Image (cartoon, rainbow, N blue to C red; front, top):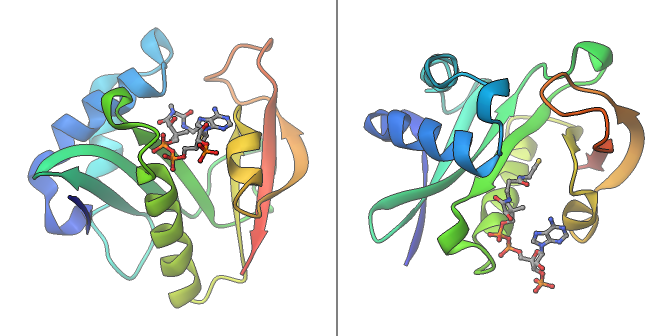
Length: 155
Ligand SMILES: CC(C)(COP(=O)(O)OP(=O)(O)OC[C@H]1O[C@@H](n2cnc3c(N)ncnc32)[C@H](O)[C@@H]1OP(=O)(O)O)[C@@H](O)C(=O)NCCC(=O)NCCS
């Protein structure tokens, strides 16, 4: 059974979520575990940004998604951003990513956002949910060979 909670209501899972985030986003040496933990520690909000949702299956944290004010140095004119969506490999293709995205979009709408943004190497996944490509980007955590697209969803 899938349960989605604000990280603000389960801050004890931050190390587990940070660890899974490192693995599933395949960031390796391009990221840093302690820095990721610190970032998630700033996300313990419910009505203000930054905030994070955590997906649980049978009380085990297995995925998350965040909503943050700023994301890309090259695109500071856009805000806010859906960020860091991941689902642990063993639990993928069960609709959990879709569920996390639907909840974070609903929260964006509730707090008064008119549009949301994200950047991703897997634009096809988000296009299926009505996100449209508006630009390209070259964030430092991805190799230049990977095409990263900036997408937008109007609310
Ligand atoms: C992308 C991700 C979050 C999807 O989570 P999920 O829980 O497996 O997704 P869902 O079960 O909601 O959706 C599965 C559907 O998406 C499709 N899909 C999964 N990954 C995809 C990808 N990279 N590109 C296009 N479609 C993809 C599946 O084929 C499936 O399609 P179907 O519904 O037509 O059968 C997950 O694969 C993941 O964590 N990947 C690693 C991290 C990542 O890439 N995050 C996004 C970067 S911004």
